[in-house]
Image: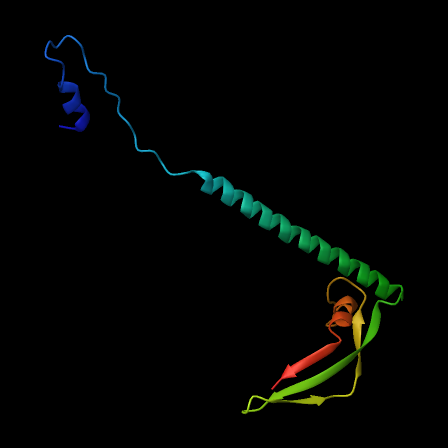
Amino acid sequence: MTFCEELSTLRSPDRSSAVIIQAVNAVEGNKSGPWLRRIALRSFLAGVGLLGIAYGTDYCVFRYRLATKRQPFGSVTVEHYYEVAHKDGKAEIIFDPPVQKTCVYSLFPHLGDPPCWFLVRHAEQRTDI
């Protein structure tokens, strides 16, 4: 006999008034997961799509500048040095002479060359040994 059936058999002594019992279902957890996951997935896909459109547009502009010879490449002087760590905790620095590196006037790297805006901000390059 279930709990609801047991409660329905319990009545007042005069048995004239019936006990009203309603079955209660367990409350399910917060259902915010599916719609939140759907919004996150759509936002991620929109971001990837916008990034793809930005890269494609940047590449088309770069190819146009390359085809019309409108100076798609630049050069930046880069200073490179090696930092050699010793066992006693000190470091030795070995400098290379400054070198002109080719860069691309675009937002993203193309043809294996970094963009000029990035190379200007990272003109000092260090290699740890």
